[in-house]
Amino acid sequence: MDINKAHSGTDLDEPMGDPREMLALLEEQQRRVADAQIAPVVWLYFIWGVAWFVGFLALWSGDENGNPWFTIPAAVATPLFIVLLVISIVSSAVIGLRINRGVRGVSSFSGAVYGLSWSVCGTAFGLLGTALISHGMSTDLANLYFPSGFALMCGTIYLGGAALWKDKSQLLLGLVMLVVGAAAPFAGSPGNDLVFALAGGGAFLVTAAVMAVRLRRNR
Amino acid sequence: MDELDPVIHASARLKITATLATLEVGDQIAFPRLQELLGMTPGNLSTHLRKLEDAGYVDVVKSHQGRTPATYLALSRTGRRAFEDYREALRGLLGESA
Figure 1 (cartoon, each protein chain N blue to C red):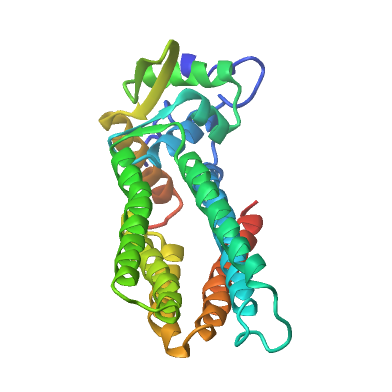
Figure 2 (cartoon, each protein chain N blue to C red):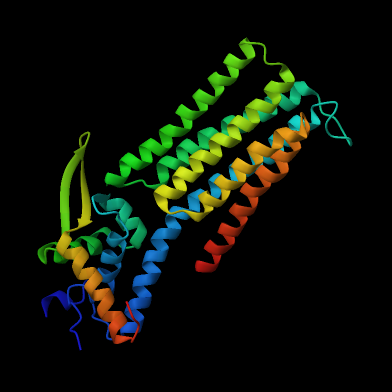
């Protein structure tokens, strides 16, 4: 049969008799496609995990009532936190665009809305904080509001992403972010920074590690 | 025993249809990206895509991105159905339930 003629000496076109082999080939290829989409997400979680862990530890250590072992100057801690945040946001945009590259059609809308929701929600939460400050919110309260607002925003968007892509890692991280964002202010400032570093950063890093191990096992 | 669809029952074309089946209905994938996911040479991929296209399993959309021509691919409705039937037939042969 013409369609089964081998092409350029390869056996790729040969019909294979064994159904088990063919089913394995089918499943392996689909897993490979899924893994190609998961791999960049692992990097995203890792980058955010480092930003949360190091950034919030720095903020906690930059406050004289924070880290009991050592203090770093606030002039270093705050810029370090901002730099880590900016790096993470830029990497997210770049990596996010790459995840579904080469694919167009109905899912482009979902991806675009998801991507946009980060900047739109970020701006909204930021503006709310600015308005609260302009109406007398103290620095102490602002230190509670901003990181929690950020965590609640992440949690909410992750839940949306989980629903959109049936993604359990986003479901788990979303729930952790919501719990951490809501609970951390009870620790006061700067105790909340330590909660964000350990629970928030920790959740990202553990998720990234687990996913990386699974990906390696699939190879 | 069901006959296995000869269009899909060759490893290269099985891999291609399996990959295209992971796309959401209504999505298309660019040729270079598909090639990357399959690890096939452009020539080999083109040959097999033509066979799938001739069988009515794959829709090929040629468009332009700026001045560069771009080819996008997707399983047709027939192709998606054929792939699912093929997978069911394999499972049936192996005694697995759907």
